[in-house]
Image (cartoon, rainbow, N blue to C red; front, side):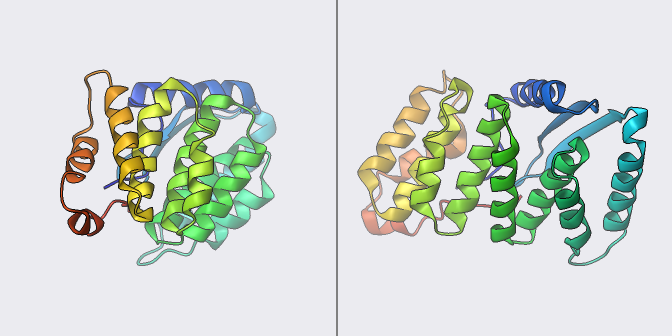
Length: 226
């Protein structure tokens, strides 16, 4: 099974990539990190401080989070979506978009998650962050059944740190499409590029391809629940 949580192979690499993006594009917002958590996405982000000319946006962002956190049951995403749209070119708007994607996936609203990721992709110019966005976007597209679009998105990922995860997702998509030969090749490539640190889930996916085709087809391969 594949989840939508990793960008780089290690969390440290994720932190450095996002910190680099904020340094380049943060509009003076100092961010410690914006990284993936667990599950399909939990994302961990730390906002240290904001300069005075962003105080109003900062307060609005904080108030939005407080109101959202106070909800019980299935949470309404309207306020987060509105904030992200209004502050699309602002650092807090990017943070809100990341939260919105996480929560949309948690609620299985994959269409909303795709929309937000496509927006982030169109506005981003920092390559390491682009790879993180593309990996998550491809997984959401696959969940929506847009397998060809997902494969196209994955082909945009070229950074060595992303090769393993990108090919793992490709393999899962190929299984859904019934192309076990391509799936095996993708998983094998991912394993070979893992430098001895093979994800047990990846190894299981590869091993499952030794089963009869009808059994392989019954194995769930895309898990988008974090």
